[in-house]
Image (cartoon, rainbow, N blue to C red; front, top):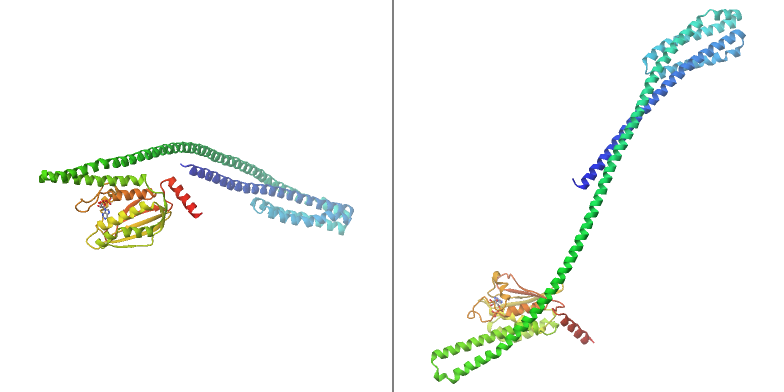
Length: 486
Ligand code: ADP
Protein backbone atom coordinates (compact mmCIF):
# COMPACT_ATOMS: atom_id res chain seq x y z
CA UNK A 1 0.00 0.00 0.00
CA UNK A 2 1.47 3.36 -0.96
CA UNK A 3 1.86 6.19 1.53
CA UNK A 4 -0.87 8.20 -0.17
CA UNK A 5 -3.41 5.39 0.05
CA UNK A 6 -2.50 4.69 3.69
CA UNK A 7 -2.85 8.36 4.60
CA UNK A 8 -6.16 8.74 2.79
CA UNK A 9 -7.48 5.55 4.45
CA UNK A 10 -6.36 6.75 7.91
CA UNK A 11 -7.88 10.20 7.51
CA UNK A 12 -11.09 8.78 6.02
CA UNK A 13 -11.42 6.40 8.99
CA UNK A 14 -10.77 9.26 11.47
CA UNK A 15 -13.28 11.44 9.64
CA UNK A 16 -15.92 8.65 9.58
CA UNK A 17 -15.43 7.99 13.29
CA UNK A 18 -15.77 11.68 14.09
CA UNK A 19 -18.95 11.81 11.99
CA UNK A 20 -20.36 8.74 13.75
CA UNK A 21 -19.44 10.17 17.15
CA UNK A 22 -21.05 13.48 16.24
CA UNK A 23 -24.21 11.67 15.12
CA UNK A 24 -24.35 9.44 18.23
CA UNK A 25 -23.58 12.36 20.56
CA UNK A 26 -26.28 14.42 18.93
CA UNK A 27 -28.89 11.62 19.23
CA UNK A 28 -27.84 10.93 22.80
CA UNK A 29 -27.95 14.63 23.62
CA UNK A 30 -31.46 14.95 22.14
CA UNK A 31 -32.54 11.90 24.16
CA UNK A 32 -30.99 13.40 27.30
CA UNK A 33 -32.83 16.71 26.78
CA UNK A 34 -36.04 14.76 26.26
CA UNK A 35 -35.50 12.88 29.55
CA UNK A 36 -34.73 16.14 31.31
CA UNK A 37 -37.94 17.64 29.91
CA UNK A 38 -39.92 14.71 31.28
CA UNK A 39 -38.39 15.08 34.74
CA UNK A 40 -39.27 18.79 34.71
CA UNK A 41 -42.73 17.85 33.52
CA UNK A 42 -43.22 15.47 36.46
CA UNK A 43 -42.12 18.20 38.88
CA UNK A 44 -44.66 20.55 37.28
CA UNK A 45 -47.49 18.01 37.81
CA UNK A 46 -46.46 17.56 41.46
CA UNK A 47 -46.38 21.35 41.96
CA UNK A 48 -49.77 21.68 40.33
CA UNK A 49 -51.28 19.03 42.66
CA UNK A 50 -49.81 20.83 45.72
CA UNK A 51 -51.07 24.18 44.55
CA UNK A 52 -54.55 22.68 43.91
CA UNK A 53 -54.69 21.39 47.47
CA UNK A 54 -53.46 24.71 48.91
CA UNK A 55 -56.20 26.57 47.05
CA UNK A 56 -58.82 24.16 48.35
CA UNK A 57 -57.56 24.77 51.91
CA UNK A 58 -57.55 28.54 51.23
CA UNK A 59 -61.16 28.33 50.05
CA UNK A 60 -62.17 26.42 53.19
CA UNK A 61 -60.27 28.77 55.51
CA UNK A 62 -61.89 31.85 53.86
CA UNK A 63 -65.33 30.26 54.20
CA UNK A 64 -64.76 29.53 57.93
CA UNK A 65 -63.53 33.07 58.62
CA UNK A 66 -66.67 34.49 56.99
CA UNK A 67 -68.99 32.13 58.89
CA UNK A 68 -67.36 33.10 62.22
CA UNK A 69 -67.09 36.87 61.62
CA UNK A 70 -69.70 37.52 58.96
CA UNK A 71 -67.23 39.86 57.29
CA UNK A 72 -67.04 39.78 53.51
CA UNK A 73 -63.32 40.53 53.55
CA UNK A 74 -62.69 37.02 54.92
CA UNK A 75 -64.12 35.65 51.68
CA UNK A 76 -61.21 37.02 49.57
CA UNK A 77 -59.12 33.76 49.72
CA UNK A 78 -62.25 31.75 48.92
CA UNK A 79 -63.07 33.87 45.90
CA UNK A 80 -59.50 33.75 44.65
CA UNK A 81 -59.46 29.96 45.06
CA UNK A 82 -62.70 29.32 43.14
CA UNK A 83 -61.24 31.21 40.16
CA UNK A 84 -57.87 29.41 40.28
CA UNK A 85 -59.06 25.85 41.04
CA UNK A 86 -60.84 25.21 37.66
CA UNK A 87 -57.84 26.68 35.84
CA UNK A 88 -55.46 24.41 37.71
CA UNK A 89 -57.64 21.40 37.04
CA UNK A 90 -57.53 22.22 33.28
CA UNK A 91 -53.78 22.55 33.42
CA UNK A 92 -53.43 19.26 35.29
CA UNK A 93 -55.51 17.52 32.64
CA UNK A 94 -53.28 18.91 29.91
CA UNK A 95 -50.08 18.04 31.78
CA UNK A 96 -51.16 14.42 32.34
CA UNK A 97 -52.75 13.95 28.93
CA UNK A 98 -50.11 11.25 28.15
CA UNK A 99 -50.94 9.24 31.29
CA UNK A 100 -54.29 7.36 31.31
CA UNK A 101 -53.90 6.50 35.05
CA UNK A 102 -53.71 10.16 36.01
CA UNK A 103 -56.51 11.04 33.62
CA UNK A 104 -58.70 8.43 35.37
CA UNK A 105 -57.82 9.92 38.77
CA UNK A 106 -58.68 13.37 37.46
CA UNK A 107 -62.02 12.03 36.22
CA UNK A 108 -62.74 11.11 39.82
CA UNK A 109 -61.13 14.19 41.39
CA UNK A 110 -63.01 16.82 39.39
CA UNK A 111 -66.54 15.91 40.61
CA UNK A 112 -65.26 15.64 44.21
CA UNK A 113 -63.79 19.14 44.04
CA UNK A 114 -66.98 20.40 42.44
CA UNK A 115 -68.96 18.85 45.28
CA UNK A 116 -66.57 20.32 47.88
CA UNK A 117 -66.83 23.81 46.37
CA UNK A 118 -70.61 23.40 46.20
CA UNK A 119 -70.72 22.59 49.95
CA UNK A 120 -68.58 25.68 50.74
CA UNK A 121 -70.77 27.93 48.63
CA UNK A 122 -73.90 26.50 50.27
CA UNK A 123 -72.55 27.22 53.82
CA UNK A 124 -71.62 30.76 52.89
CA UNK A 125 -75.13 31.27 51.55
CA UNK A 126 -76.67 29.84 54.81
CA UNK A 127 -74.48 32.19 56.93
CA UNK A 128 -75.42 35.12 54.75
CA UNK A 129 -79.17 34.45 54.91
CA UNK A 130 -79.71 32.62 58.21
CA UNK A 131 -76.99 34.00 60.47
CA UNK A 132 -74.07 32.69 62.54
CA UNK A 133 -75.81 29.80 64.35
CA UNK A 134 -77.15 28.27 61.15
CA UNK A 135 -73.72 28.74 59.51
CA UNK A 136 -71.89 26.99 62.39
CA UNK A 137 -74.47 24.18 62.38
CA UNK A 138 -73.88 23.68 58.62
CA UNK A 139 -70.12 23.41 59.20
CA UNK A 140 -70.61 20.92 61.98
CA UNK A 141 -72.73 18.72 59.72
CA UNK A 142 -69.41 17.24 58.37
CA UNK A 143 -70.04 16.47 54.64
CA UNK A 144 -67.29 18.98 53.66
CA UNK A 145 -64.71 17.04 55.65
CA UNK A 146 -65.66 13.81 53.88
CA UNK A 147 -65.12 15.35 50.45
CA UNK A 148 -61.84 16.86 51.60
CA UNK A 149 -60.57 13.51 52.87
CA UNK A 150 -61.46 11.80 49.60
CA UNK A 151 -59.74 14.60 47.68
CA UNK A 152 -56.59 14.17 49.83
CA UNK A 153 -56.53 10.42 49.17
CA UNK A 154 -56.92 10.92 45.40
CA UNK A 155 -54.29 13.69 45.31
CA UNK A 156 -51.91 11.48 47.29
CA UNK A 157 -52.45 8.64 44.78
CA UNK A 158 -51.73 11.00 41.91
CA UNK A 159 -48.57 12.25 43.64
CA UNK A 160 -47.48 8.68 44.22
CA UNK A 161 -47.88 7.95 40.49
CA UNK A 162 -45.86 11.05 39.68
CA UNK A 163 -43.19 10.10 42.22
CA UNK A 164 -42.91 6.69 40.55
CA UNK A 165 -42.55 8.38 37.17
CA UNK A 166 -40.02 10.80 38.63
CA UNK A 167 -37.82 7.94 39.84
CA UNK A 168 -38.12 6.21 36.43
CA UNK A 169 -37.37 9.37 34.47
CA UNK A 170 -34.52 10.45 36.73
CA UNK A 171 -32.93 7.05 36.21
CA UNK A 172 -33.34 7.37 32.45
CA UNK A 173 -31.93 10.91 32.56
CA UNK A 174 -28.90 9.70 34.42
CA UNK A 175 -28.42 6.73 32.07
CA UNK A 176 -28.67 8.86 28.94
CA UNK A 177 -26.21 11.37 30.45
CA UNK A 178 -23.78 8.54 31.13
CA UNK A 179 -24.22 7.23 27.59
CA UNK A 180 -23.55 10.66 26.07
CA UNK A 181 -20.38 11.05 28.10
CA UNK A 182 -19.22 7.57 27.19
CA UNK A 183 -19.83 8.08 23.46
CA UNK A 184 -17.91 11.34 23.54
CA UNK A 185 -14.99 9.89 25.43
CA UNK A 186 -14.72 6.74 23.25
CA UNK A 187 -15.24 8.74 20.03
CA UNK A 188 -12.67 11.33 20.94
CA UNK A 189 -10.27 8.59 21.95
CA UNK A 190 -10.70 6.78 18.63
CA UNK A 191 -10.45 10.01 16.61
CA UNK A 192 -7.30 10.90 18.49
CA UNK A 193 -5.94 7.41 17.87
CA UNK A 194 -6.47 7.66 14.09
CA UNK A 195 -5.09 11.20 13.96
CA UNK A 196 -2.04 10.02 15.86
CA UNK A 197 -1.69 7.14 13.36
CA UNK A 198 -1.96 9.60 10.43
CA UNK A 199 0.61 11.86 12.12
CA UNK A 200 2.91 8.88 12.62
CA UNK A 201 2.53 7.93 8.94
CA UNK A 202 3.32 11.48 7.82
CA UNK A 203 6.33 11.60 10.09
CA UNK A 204 7.56 8.25 8.75
CA UNK A 205 7.03 9.36 5.12
CA UNK A 206 8.86 12.63 5.75
CA UNK A 207 11.78 10.73 7.19
CA UNK A 208 11.74 8.31 4.24
CA UNK A 209 11.69 11.23 1.78
CA UNK A 210 14.43 13.06 3.60
CA UNK A 211 16.65 9.98 3.46
CA UNK A 212 15.71 9.40 -0.23
CA UNK A 213 16.60 13.02 -1.01
CA UNK A 214 19.86 12.61 0.85
CA UNK A 215 20.54 9.46 -1.18
CA UNK A 216 19.72 11.29 -4.44
CA UNK A 217 22.06 14.12 -3.43
CA UNK A 218 24.82 11.63 -2.68
CA UNK A 219 24.19 9.84 -5.98
CA UNK A 220 24.18 13.17 -7.82
CA UNK A 221 27.46 14.18 -6.27
CA UNK A 222 28.89 10.79 -7.17
CA UNK A 223 27.57 11.12 -10.71
CA UNK A 224 28.95 14.64 -11.06
CA UNK A 225 32.32 13.46 -9.82
CA UNK A 226 32.29 10.55 -12.27
CA UNK A 227 31.19 12.78 -15.15
CA UNK A 228 33.99 15.21 -14.30
CA UNK A 229 36.49 12.36 -14.19
CA UNK A 230 35.19 10.94 -17.46
CA UNK A 231 35.23 14.38 -19.10
CA UNK A 232 38.82 14.91 -18.01
CA UNK A 233 39.66 11.43 -19.28
CA UNK A 234 37.96 12.13 -22.60
CA UNK A 235 39.72 15.48 -22.91
CA UNK A 236 43.05 13.72 -22.30
CA UNK A 237 42.19 11.10 -24.89
CA UNK A 238 41.05 13.74 -27.39
CA UNK A 239 44.34 15.54 -26.90
CA UNK A 240 46.23 12.30 -27.33
CA UNK A 241 44.20 11.47 -30.44
CA UNK A 242 44.82 14.90 -31.89
CA UNK A 243 48.52 14.55 -31.21
CA UNK A 244 48.72 11.09 -32.82
CA UNK A 245 46.59 12.30 -35.74
CA UNK A 246 48.95 15.19 -36.29
CA UNK A 247 51.88 12.80 -36.13
CA UNK A 248 50.20 10.47 -38.62
CA UNK A 249 49.44 13.32 -40.99
CA UNK A 250 52.99 14.54 -40.63
CA UNK A 251 54.22 11.04 -41.28
CA UNK A 252 51.98 10.61 -44.35
CA UNK A 253 53.15 13.96 -45.65
CA UNK A 254 56.84 13.30 -45.06
CA UNK A 255 56.61 9.73 -46.36
CA UNK A 256 54.78 10.69 -49.54
CA UNK A 257 57.03 13.68 -50.04
CA UNK A 258 60.20 11.63 -49.53
CA UNK A 259 58.94 8.72 -51.62
CA UNK A 260 58.48 10.95 -54.66
CA UNK A 261 62.18 11.44 -55.18
CA UNK A 262 63.28 7.75 -55.40
CA UNK A 263 60.18 7.04 -57.46
CA UNK A 264 61.06 9.78 -59.93
CA UNK A 265 64.56 8.32 -60.08
CA UNK A 266 63.19 4.84 -60.84
CA UNK A 267 60.85 6.17 -63.51
CA UNK A 268 63.43 8.37 -65.23
CA UNK A 269 66.16 5.73 -65.15
CA UNK A 270 63.82 3.07 -66.47
CA UNK A 271 62.83 5.43 -69.28
CA UNK A 272 66.52 6.19 -69.91
CA UNK A 273 67.24 2.47 -70.01
CA UNK A 274 64.51 1.98 -72.61
CA UNK A 275 65.81 4.88 -74.70
CA UNK A 276 69.54 4.13 -74.58
CA UNK A 277 69.38 0.38 -75.02
CA UNK A 278 66.32 0.09 -77.18
CA UNK A 279 68.33 -1.53 -80.00
CA UNK A 280 69.74 -4.08 -77.60
CA UNK A 281 66.40 -5.01 -76.05
CA UNK A 282 63.86 -7.40 -77.48
CA UNK A 283 60.10 -6.71 -77.54
CA UNK A 284 59.46 -8.61 -74.28
CA UNK A 285 62.06 -6.51 -72.42
CA UNK A 286 60.56 -3.30 -73.83
CA UNK A 287 57.10 -4.45 -72.70
CA UNK A 288 58.45 -5.12 -69.18
CA UNK A 289 60.10 -1.72 -69.08
CA UNK A 290 56.77 -0.14 -70.12
CA UNK A 291 55.02 -1.98 -67.25
CA UNK A 292 57.64 -0.67 -64.82
CA UNK A 293 57.22 2.90 -66.12
CA UNK A 294 53.42 2.62 -65.92
CA UNK A 295 53.57 1.25 -62.39
CA UNK A 296 55.88 4.00 -61.16
CA UNK A 297 53.62 6.64 -62.77
CA UNK A 298 50.58 5.16 -61.05
CA UNK A 299 52.48 5.13 -57.82
CA UNK A 300 53.42 8.76 -58.34
CA UNK A 301 49.74 9.64 -58.83
CA UNK A 302 48.80 7.74 -55.66
CA UNK A 303 51.54 9.46 -53.69
CA UNK A 304 50.43 12.85 -55.01
CA UNK A 305 46.85 12.06 -53.96
CA UNK A 306 48.03 10.98 -50.54
CA UNK A 307 49.99 14.19 -50.25
CA UNK A 308 46.95 16.24 -51.22
CA UNK A 309 44.88 14.33 -48.66
CA UNK A 310 47.33 14.93 -45.84
CA UNK A 311 47.68 18.61 -46.83
CA UNK A 312 43.98 19.24 -46.08
CA UNK A 313 44.69 18.90 -42.36
CA UNK A 314 48.22 20.27 -42.22
CA UNK A 315 48.44 22.98 -44.83
CA UNK A 316 45.00 24.60 -45.03
CA UNK A 317 44.59 28.37 -45.47
CA UNK A 318 43.00 30.58 -42.80
CA UNK A 319 39.21 31.01 -43.06
CA UNK A 320 37.83 33.99 -44.91
CA UNK A 321 34.40 35.15 -46.01
CA UNK A 322 33.88 33.15 -49.19
CA UNK A 323 31.27 34.16 -51.75
CA UNK A 324 30.17 30.77 -53.05
CA UNK A 325 28.54 32.21 -56.19
CA UNK A 326 31.75 33.85 -57.39
CA UNK A 327 33.75 30.77 -56.39
CA UNK A 328 31.47 28.54 -58.46
CA UNK A 329 31.85 30.83 -61.49
CA UNK A 330 35.59 30.28 -61.34
CA UNK A 331 35.21 26.51 -60.95
CA UNK A 332 32.88 26.30 -63.94
CA UNK A 333 35.45 28.23 -65.97
CA UNK A 334 38.10 25.66 -64.92
CA UNK A 335 35.83 22.78 -65.85
CA UNK A 336 34.81 24.39 -69.18
CA UNK A 337 36.41 21.65 -71.34
CA UNK A 338 34.88 18.79 -69.37
CA UNK A 339 31.46 20.48 -69.36
CA UNK A 340 31.49 21.09 -73.08
CA UNK A 341 32.72 17.61 -73.98
CA UNK A 342 30.08 15.93 -71.79
CA UNK A 343 27.34 18.40 -72.78
CA UNK A 344 26.48 18.77 -69.09
CA UNK A 345 23.75 21.24 -68.08
CA UNK A 346 24.63 22.81 -64.71
CA UNK A 347 22.04 24.94 -62.90
CA UNK A 348 22.09 26.51 -59.43
CA UNK A 349 20.13 28.49 -56.85
CA UNK A 350 21.60 31.66 -55.32
CA UNK A 351 24.47 30.58 -53.05
CA UNK A 352 25.47 32.17 -49.72
CA UNK A 353 28.64 33.70 -48.37
CA UNK A 354 30.29 31.33 -45.88
CA UNK A 355 33.31 31.53 -43.65
CA UNK A 356 35.94 29.03 -44.77
CA UNK A 357 39.07 28.08 -46.64
CA UNK A 358 38.21 29.24 -50.14
CA UNK A 359 40.78 27.00 -51.84
CA UNK A 360 39.53 23.88 -50.06
CA UNK A 361 35.87 24.73 -50.59
CA UNK A 362 36.60 25.18 -54.33
CA UNK A 363 38.32 21.79 -54.35
CA UNK A 364 35.27 20.25 -52.67
CA UNK A 365 32.81 21.68 -55.22
CA UNK A 366 35.11 20.75 -58.07
CA UNK A 367 35.37 17.13 -56.86
CA UNK A 368 31.61 16.78 -56.62
CA UNK A 369 30.98 18.40 -60.03
CA UNK A 370 33.71 16.31 -61.74
CA UNK A 371 32.22 13.11 -60.27
CA UNK A 372 28.70 14.14 -61.30
CA UNK A 373 29.91 14.47 -64.91
CA UNK A 374 32.20 11.43 -64.76
CA UNK A 375 29.60 9.03 -63.42
CA UNK A 376 26.93 10.14 -65.85
CA UNK A 377 24.18 7.86 -67.18
CA UNK A 378 23.05 7.42 -70.76
CA UNK A 379 21.45 10.86 -71.09
CA UNK A 380 22.80 14.41 -70.91
CA UNK A 381 24.25 15.07 -67.43
CA UNK A 382 22.02 17.47 -65.53
CA UNK A 383 23.49 18.88 -62.33
CA UNK A 384 21.84 21.24 -59.87
CA UNK A 385 23.52 23.05 -56.96
CA UNK A 386 21.48 24.53 -54.12
CA UNK A 387 21.90 25.77 -50.52
CA UNK A 388 19.50 26.25 -47.60
CA UNK A 389 20.03 27.73 -44.15
CA UNK A 390 19.69 25.25 -41.29
CA UNK A 391 19.96 27.05 -37.96
CA UNK A 392 23.59 28.11 -37.67
CA UNK A 393 24.61 25.98 -40.68
CA UNK A 394 24.32 26.07 -44.44
CA UNK A 395 23.29 22.87 -46.16
CA UNK A 396 24.58 22.48 -49.75
CA UNK A 397 23.21 19.94 -52.23
CA UNK A 398 24.76 18.76 -55.50
CA UNK A 399 22.24 16.65 -57.37
CA UNK A 400 22.92 14.72 -60.60
CA UNK A 401 21.06 12.31 -62.88
CA UNK A 402 23.98 9.89 -63.24
CA UNK A 403 24.41 6.20 -62.46
CA UNK A 404 23.59 6.62 -58.76
CA UNK A 405 25.09 4.82 -55.77
CA UNK A 406 23.39 1.88 -54.05
CA UNK A 407 22.67 2.54 -50.34
CA UNK A 408 25.07 -0.15 -49.04
CA UNK A 409 28.04 1.73 -50.59
CA UNK A 410 27.05 5.21 -49.52
CA UNK A 411 29.38 5.30 -46.49
CA UNK A 412 32.26 3.34 -48.02
CA UNK A 413 32.90 5.74 -50.88
CA UNK A 414 34.09 8.46 -48.48
CA UNK A 415 36.97 6.21 -47.33
CA UNK A 416 40.33 6.87 -48.98
CA UNK A 417 41.06 4.78 -52.12
CA UNK A 418 37.60 3.17 -52.03
CA UNK A 419 36.07 2.90 -55.53
CA UNK A 420 33.03 1.10 -56.86
CA UNK A 421 34.40 0.68 -60.39
CA UNK A 422 37.55 -0.47 -62.14
CA UNK A 423 39.94 2.00 -63.76
CA UNK A 424 38.88 0.81 -67.22
CA UNK A 425 35.21 1.54 -66.48
CA UNK A 426 35.83 4.98 -64.93
CA UNK A 427 39.29 6.50 -64.41
CA UNK A 428 40.26 7.71 -60.94
CA UNK A 429 42.13 6.87 -57.74
CA UNK A 430 39.34 6.95 -55.16
CA UNK A 431 40.71 9.95 -53.24
CA UNK A 432 38.30 12.75 -54.31
CA UNK A 433 35.49 12.01 -51.83
CA UNK A 434 37.92 11.24 -48.97
CA UNK A 435 39.45 14.73 -49.48
CA UNK A 436 35.93 16.24 -49.75
CA UNK A 437 34.96 14.66 -46.42
CA UNK A 438 38.08 15.97 -44.73
CA UNK A 439 37.43 19.50 -46.07
CA UNK A 440 33.81 19.43 -44.84
CA UNK A 441 34.89 18.21 -41.39
CA UNK A 442 37.50 20.94 -41.18
CA UNK A 443 34.61 23.37 -41.76
CA UNK A 444 32.63 21.89 -38.83
CA UNK A 445 30.13 20.04 -41.05
CA UNK A 446 29.37 16.57 -42.37
CA UNK A 447 28.83 15.02 -45.81
CA UNK A 448 26.33 12.34 -46.82
CA UNK A 449 24.17 11.06 -49.66
CA UNK A 450 20.40 11.49 -49.84
CA UNK A 451 17.92 9.49 -51.91
CA UNK A 452 17.32 11.06 -55.32
CA UNK A 453 13.84 10.69 -56.79
CA UNK A 454 14.11 9.69 -60.47
CA UNK A 455 17.67 8.26 -60.15
CA UNK A 456 21.14 9.78 -59.87
CA UNK A 457 22.92 10.91 -56.70
CA UNK A 458 22.49 13.83 -54.32
CA UNK A 459 25.56 14.77 -52.31
CA UNK A 460 24.77 16.93 -49.28
CA UNK A 461 27.17 18.65 -46.95
CA UNK A 462 26.93 21.29 -44.23
CA UNK A 463 29.21 24.19 -43.41
CA UNK A 464 28.93 25.95 -40.07
CA UNK A 465 28.23 29.64 -40.63
CA UNK A 466 31.22 30.79 -38.59
CA UNK A 467 32.93 27.50 -39.44
CA UNK A 468 36.39 26.68 -38.23
CA UNK A 469 37.87 23.58 -36.71
CA UNK A 470 40.81 25.52 -35.40
CA UNK A 471 40.59 28.25 -32.76
CA UNK A 472 43.69 29.99 -34.15
CA UNK A 473 42.16 30.18 -37.57
CA UNK A 474 38.99 31.76 -36.21
CA UNK A 475 41.11 34.26 -34.32
CA UNK A 476 43.04 35.03 -37.50
CA UNK A 477 39.83 35.47 -39.40
CA UNK A 478 38.34 37.78 -36.81
CA UNK A 479 41.57 39.75 -36.59
CA UNK A 480 41.63 40.15 -40.34
CA UNK A 481 37.98 41.13 -40.67
CA UNK A 482 38.30 43.72 -37.92
CA UNK A 483 41.52 45.10 -39.49
CA UNK A 484 39.91 45.36 -42.91
CA UNK A 485 36.88 47.06 -41.39
CA UNK A 486 39.25 49.69 -39.96
P1 ADP B 1 37.20 8.55 -57.94
O1 ADP B 1 36.29 9.55 -58.54
O2 ADP B 1 38.63 8.86 -58.15
O3 ADP B 1 36.84 7.17 -58.20
P2 ADP B 1 36.01 9.44 -55.49
O4 ADP B 1 36.50 9.38 -54.11
O5 ADP B 1 35.73 10.78 -56.05
O6 ADP B 1 37.08 8.68 -56.37
O7 ADP B 1 34.72 8.56 -55.60
C1 ADP B 1 34.68 7.30 -55.01
C2 ADP B 1 33.64 6.46 -55.71
O8 ADP B 1 32.35 6.93 -55.44
C3 ADP B 1 33.73 6.49 -57.20
O9 ADP B 1 34.67 5.55 -57.69
C4 ADP B 1 32.31 6.15 -57.62
O10 ADP B 1 32.14 4.78 -57.64
C5 ADP B 1 31.48 6.74 -56.54
N1 ADP B 1 30.95 8.08 -56.94
C6 ADP B 1 31.40 9.27 -56.58
N2 ADP B 1 30.61 10.26 -57.06
C7 ADP B 1 29.62 9.66 -57.75
C8 ADP B 1 28.48 10.12 -58.49
N3 ADP B 1 28.23 11.43 -58.64
N4 ADP B 1 27.66 9.20 -59.04
C9 ADP B 1 27.90 7.89 -58.89
N5 ADP B 1 28.95 7.38 -58.20
C10 ADP B 1 29.82 8.25 -57.66
